[in-house]
Length: 526
Image (tube, rainbow, N blue to C red; front, top):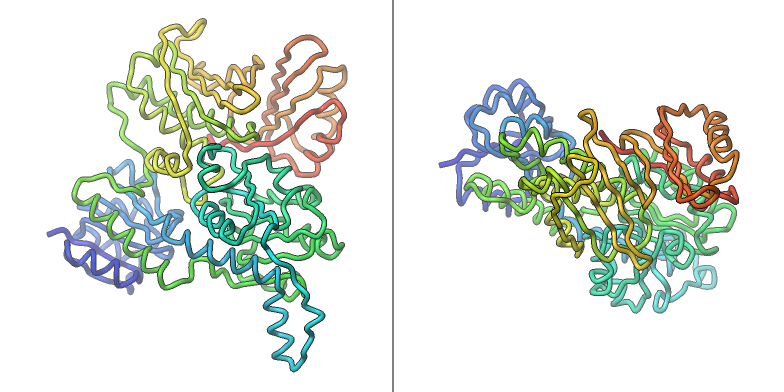
């Protein structure tokens, strides 16, 4: 019988599943040395967030076949070391979706009817009926930033309240949105049209301070903001200013950039509802977390493929030399496409050319899906769980192969089909490094890595100098530059690799330039 070690409390429902199929020991008293000492006796390890499953710990698990994380994040587990040792890692990312969605609806209604403030007033002995005049949410517009599992659950419930729901999510298909009764739109339109904006995105380099002063200014005057996602997604100082100035009517927060939010001026503000990160705090969510991680661990021990495995798939040795560099390129192409394509996407196409047409490209496809989803999903996205997430989002993907790669030995092409036509990104391997050789129809050549700045502009004298001057004033150093254009003095794209991330105020300044149609910064992980 398999032996399973549980080092942190999980719901009894999950423990019951485990005990029905394996021998289970619960040891919540172990320090690192104690864990290392007894781990060789076990086939599986289940943790929450406190146990650090380091490479040293994993190396001690000579029988270990799977590590289960009872929750969403796996930051406390060394995934690379686990993959290298052939140890599967599973988590439970879907367990809190309904709990967070219901809390979001509760916050919508609480904002509309001033419920916490009215309660406090009555407790204080007052009877201020006229002070707490509210509004009906029926026929109001709810804007969702993120339409993944939680966003979809919010949309279903908001539609039941007869709200109009619009959403921004660059990888969700229009068909999937239509099934939910949601209209997809660019982020700027969602912010401008919504009476209430609710955030449902993870905290990544791409989403940190996503809702900054400029984005808050795009919101409808008198609108409300809800953040039950991650605190760092919102610039809290800018949010306070937007509320104090009267541009926003108020906000509801369950998460903060620093938790607990000691000294945060938003706490106690009369027009802000603040909660102590209660999103997943329901009996049902905790029970489901325990069951999900238990089932994932048991499937892995039986040699199956758990739904929520999070570490990378295996590449056969005979293909590793050819395929591995394109796996890296595919992930970066996916991140680039997700970062630059703002319009709703109907479907994606992948074309494998040249040497890529002669091998199994499954790992490349999975890497592209990982890149497309990585910056927009709450859970950690890997090539293992990317297909499941893509199916849940209704992401459509077709693949083609051709032996003709032109001047390249191999070429990987990713297209996003939007209502305005195809957006194409192509790359290859040059000198052992992944290079993009075409982006959005512009012939540019660059390594997609680290902080980057992209501008779509009219080709005019002095444009490069203007951008360089703004970056120089912000003490941002340029590592490399490439410019592609359709014709002299026509449309052009400039790609800058930088040593430092671009401050938000620089992006705002660039977008104010009359000859720059669009400017954005991305951080592409190498």
